[in-house]
Image (cartoon, helix red, strand yellow):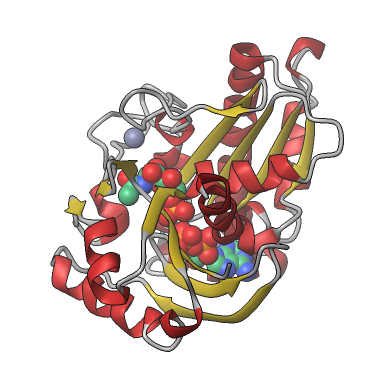
Amino acid sequence: MTTLAIDLGGTKLAAALVDEQLQIRQRCELPTPASDRPDALRAALRTLVQPLAADAQRVAIASTGIIRDGLLQAINPQNLGGLLHFPLVATLEALTRLPTLAINDAQAAALAEYARMPDGGDMVFITVSTGVGGGVVCRGELLTGAGGLAGHLGHTLADPHGPRCGCGRIGCVEAIASGRAIAAAAQGDLAGCDAKTIFARAAAGHPQADALIQRSAAALARMIADVKATTDCRQVVVGGSIGLAQGYLARVRACLMQLPSPYQVTLTAAYYRHDAGLLGAALAAQRQG
Ligand code: ADP
Ligand code: BMX
Ligand code: ZN
């Protein structure tokens, strides 16, 4: 069976056809609409799925937000242009006439990354992207929680005196480490730059750009220590465009190494790189049968 897999993030929407061996073809991408109008997202999804739906037998979407009963509920609506709710499954079933599964993006990526780990062991996936998301695999099972909130590590506390997060809480990891947070903290000649530009400026030796990235990496390392203390996981896998950016994981490792030995854990970059969410959604659909 061929799955039309979709990854809906705060910045980009990706889609592809995925076969039973998890081979990807016809991958395409669009920017996520920065609008609180559900119609804008519906229109973007229509553009994305229209060329692919005829060659698929089902749809699987990995999406940012708390996903429950096929509905998206934003914990941080600022990541989606202010959009709070969206009926993912009903919209995609109406657009494609295909059965559709929806799963949180970081939870999906955790499934894909865990499936290719040779020796199992508890694993936590973290995406550092528009926001900061997570997925926890414990004894071979993905934790979703009763309401879908499990693994939302970006909304754990980094600094009680930090900036207010879009979720309403003060000082979340996401409000310091995410792409949006890096951009929001930029001042002077960096004001208005996105995180990708700030990484490029840091590579060219810009001290403020370097400090913003270091602040993100340090917050992520502290969060990973908390994750280790909570789960005693064997491995932490990092993805997302910030997580996978040149030099970022090395910075996180260097910060983590400053901490005592119980907090040390194997840290790796996502094997499936930017496709971990897409492939995890396809895998979840395969398993559902
Ligand atoms: P999404 O959140 O939609 O899944 P990404 O994982 O691409 O998307 O994360 C988007 C964030 O990553 C944005 O803040 C963007 O500026 C930043 N970004 C994109 N490409 C890069 C890059 N090559 N290096 C550093 N940051 C990047
Ligand atoms: C936010 C939250 C999570 C998501 C994470 C990463 C929303 C809309 N999303 O914490 O559900 O997993 O961002 O999302 O509240 P991404 O778009 O950065 O991949
Ligand atoms: Zn938060």
